Every structure is written in structure tokens, then in C-alpha cells.
Image 1 (cartoon, protein in one colour):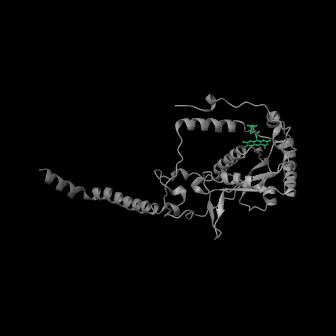
Image 2: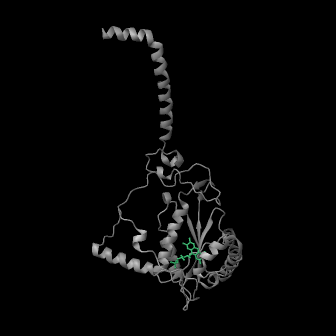
Image 3: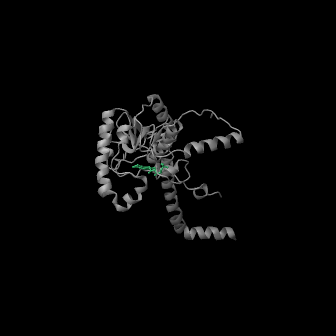
Length: 302
Ligand SMILES: Cc1cc2nc3c(=O)[nH]c(=O)nc-3n(C[C@H](O)[C@H](O)[C@H](O)COP(=O)(O)O)c2cc1C
């Protein structure tokens, strides 16, 4: 009975059945074609093509947003060999007591850090600066792109030129660009356009961020999260400076970046992000008396 009904149904309605099945089949074939195309190794793919569940999917929207940068549109080529070997992680283990003690000591060391704007001219061995920059270079970076350059200036003439560039721009910044509210909110820091420390500190470290790198064949390759990566490495640089008993002040040379980059002979795709004088504090150095937020205000425990 059921069998004759089925035969009857198919005989009468086969055109309708085919009309439903055929488009579904075509859709399936098209979808399989595109899915296979997406399954090429990720190193050959633009991150925007990665599927939602892919472990690298977080990089999909990671295009730099810096308007100052000339972003490459070229496809990515592998940065690391696909067969990069794994190796054992060397773990230095401490007891819980040691961990508590070390974390307290490190907090004390870092809590003593202050932005110092008055420098002694006492020389600092270049070896110390090398080690500090080397330490900054241990920072994590998006897809291990290491998108930073630390230009260390010790030459007195170059330092003076940098001071000239910065002060010229800072004069306009304080006078016009920053606006009354900003200038007023900065009064506690007691700064103005004059930056004598740019001459006096034995070293200036210019931190440059690199939105992309240029391969040997001239192809441009995007550096994911280049800005945050460079910022993290600068944080490590600042901690390393504090660790050796030297001081710095994190400065953002507004509108002076291009002139400083050109003076240092750095390529156009490197952007000046920060300028840090490094040295001993002047014997009579003072800092604004400020308080830091208590732990409860910056940490939430769930
Ligand atoms: C992103 C950034 C930009 C800064 N820019 C300047 C600057 O241009 N000039 C300056 O004198 N200090 C600058 N500072 C230093 C801050 O004023 C300082 O960190 C803040 O007042 C807190 O003081 P502390 O560093 O002694 O804890 C900057 C700090 C940061 C993190």
C-alpha cells in the first residue's frame, strides 16, 4: 500500500522533487569549492579569511588603524617556517614563599619608579643600555613580528637637534594644539615647552613602531598588533631601566616624529612612538607628589 503510494507520488511529482533537490545539490557543490579553497595553509592566507573557529582568528580584525601609516595591501607570505620545531620550555620554579617574596620585592622596585625630568650628565656605560634594550626585545609581539626599533642616541649634536625639534613643536603644542583644558590638567607635572633633559641625559632612546616590514623582494608584510606590541616592549624597557637604578620619562613628541625619524635616518615605514631620556637623576631632582590608585581600585577578583 505504502509502496504503491510512494511510486504514485514520485511519478506525479518528480518534477517538483527535482526542482528542490537540484538547486540544493548546486549550492552544496559551490560551498564545497569555497571551503576547500579556504583550507590552504594559513600562512598563505590573509587573516581576514580565517574561519571563526580558527586559533588565529583573533588576528582577523587586527589591521593597524594608525592613519600615519602607509599600510600594505599585499598578501602575507609565511613569516615563520611551517615546520618550526617545538622545544622543551625551560621553567625556573620557585616555592610559594619565594614567589610571594619576589613579587613583593618587584612591586617595591617598580613602585619606586617615577617619571624624572631632571637629569645628571654623569655618563652611563653603553653596555647597560645595550642590556636594557636587549631586555625590551624579549617582549611578546603579535605573531612574533617584533615590530619595534630602539634608536639609542648618545651623540651630543644629535641630542641637541632632537631638543630643537621637540621644543619648537612643544611650543606650538602648549600654545595652540593642546588647548586650555589639557594644559591645565598638566599643571601638576610642572612642564612647559622647554626640555633641557634632552641635552642633559646621556642617552635618548627613540622608540619606533613598525606597522609592517619590507621583505628582501620589496614585498610589504603586515605586523599584527604592532602598536600594542611596541607599547609592551617599552613597558619592559622602563622596568629594565628601573632595575639598574637609572631613570627616564616616557614622552610623546607630538608632531615631531617625522623630523626625528628623518634626523635619525630611519626608513619611512618606522613611526616615532615615544622618546625616553635615560640616565641618573640630577642630585636635586624633584617629582610631583602623586598617589597611585590602591589595589582595590585597579583589580577585580571574580
Ligand atoms: C603614553 C605616555 C605619554 C607621556 N607623555 C609625557 C610627555 O610628553 N611629557 C612628560 O613630561 N611626561 C609624559 N608622560 C609621563 C606622565 O606624565 C607620568 O607617567 C604621570 O604623570 C605619572 O607619573 P609617574 O610616571 O612618575 O608615575 C607620559 C606618560 C605616558 C604613559
